[in-house]
Amino acid sequence: MTKISEIQIIPIKPQKGLLAFANFVLDEKLFVSSVAIHTKIDGSGYRITYPKKNQFDLFHPINRETSKTIEKAVISKFKNVMKLNNDRYNSPFDTTR
Image (cartoon, rainbow, N blue to C red):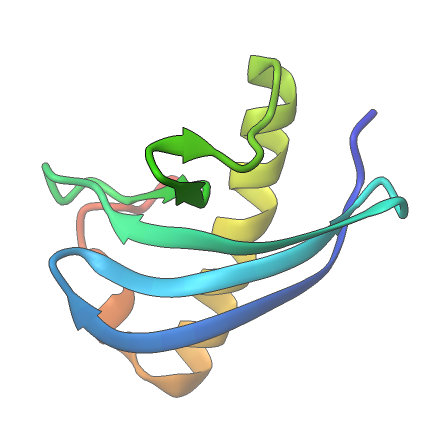
């Protein structure tokens, strides 16, 4: 099972749906940084995107299970951090996470 730990959330001034960046450790073996946290276009929650350079992915999960594990851990931490700072980042439509 994939383990996500040491999650760091770096909030930014919201712009075009981008709210924050996340760093984390994957399986106690790999430090992953600059993962972007965005609002979903339909306002139903959040999504994450991985960094690119010249239109090429620098890294990304290779299967859906790992992707969902990372997304769940990062967004959960993001919500906790933002709840402590202010509620403007918490979507009123997203009550399932």
